[in-house]
Image 1 (tube, rainbow, N blue to C red):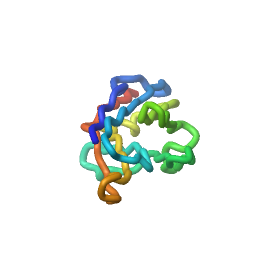
Image 2: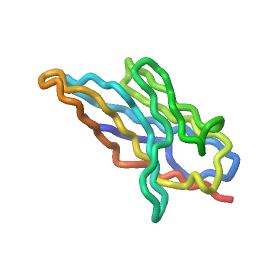
Image 3: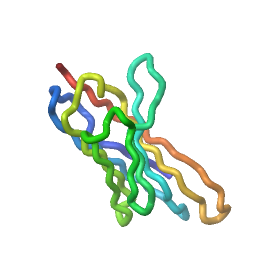
Image 4: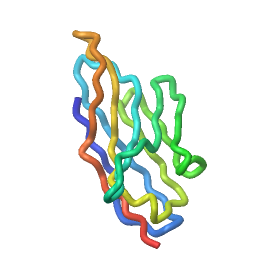
Length: 120
């Protein structure tokens, strides 16, 4: 499984950005797709995740501002980020969990990360 993220960049506070992550898979059934972030000197934290059914979950810090969605036909997960704050500055990582069809083993994969910088 390979994950490629895009959409990061520099934005002013109260602005918006949309991240995308495309998963390239072979004989792998994707279950949960998620976004994590890691700010300098902080641990990586969950931002939002979305099940294969489309049911989303959000960290309290982003509820009402961020929206996670997915296009199963394109193996793509999105993160629409609105009303951005300087404290949202971090490297954002895509995470995909699923099952290898040959082994029925569950695995998770990470993207390389995309930097989001919010200026005040």
